[in-house]
Image 1 (tube, helix red, strand yellow):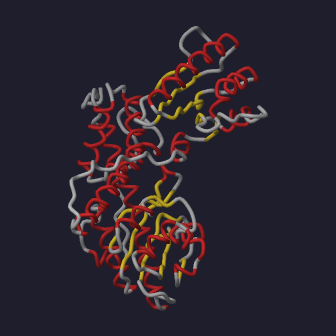
Image 2: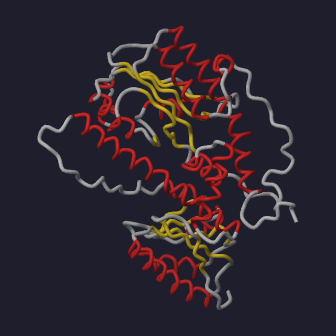
Image 3: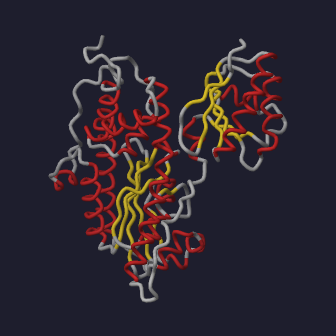
Length: 406
């Protein structure tokens, strides 16, 4: 390794500092690596950040590098450095007997999804009267839950900004956000969805086109749901809302929600639309990462999940989501996975009734399965067309690009 700085800082979010190491450090390089890693750790601690060490461009590590990383992070067992590395490098690092201050991951997105949600400061207290209306208190609770929802997406958008800054040599986060916003508005793709695509899509294949040779778009799937919808199939919010309304009507449910998987968050279920119940429940299922939430069970089993009585389901009744359902007076749950022809779950439709009991009936269940299949087909088409169009627009309208392609 030369005497140059071994670590490069990549802009990320207001919660994370990402530093990248390229090449294979020699003995002299390990001395500088230790010094700079110490510096970045101290700086991240001062900012209240977690440190991510990106070793994706490191072909191999020897025992000296392993010991350097171990020694500089021994004290971080409670808040370990997140290390992104190839399978080969992860295997080499694991040869070190004890790495309490490191956690190894295959991708940056995978590492970031393990971070806990950002703490959200509650709105400043407002003067209240003893007889303050309940609706006003509920409004404040909704405001707080809205702040939490924004915090959940801020990290993902920040990572996308950092990637755009590095890829296009942008001057800073503001320019990256402006580029994301333009792509979002031009193609009517939610900012969060576009940010997820930036993080998970393969890098652009040329300066002129992100996806060369895409050609003519496939038409939207010819399904019963889209034929009955008869609206703009590229309007994501309207399509999802129509699917939810249809599901609630078919099941004669009193509430429901739609989740889609998010590839940038290890295919966790992200809440897309909801109706009924209250903010306390929606806050608990805004991002579902696993059981006992029925949607997560439906996702993992690739089959509908029925909970006749939440109170009698011990794991769910003990979970905050189940407790929120019971507090809202909702007892029965039915969740259907959105499965593509390739047997991939791309989301869930979940429905609720206040009264406990087996529900819905066989005919309604069959109709819900057909609806779920139709929604899965639409989402697959939307991701292959509308979302890729938004990425292409972003790539071709980046600052500094010659519009004539020269």
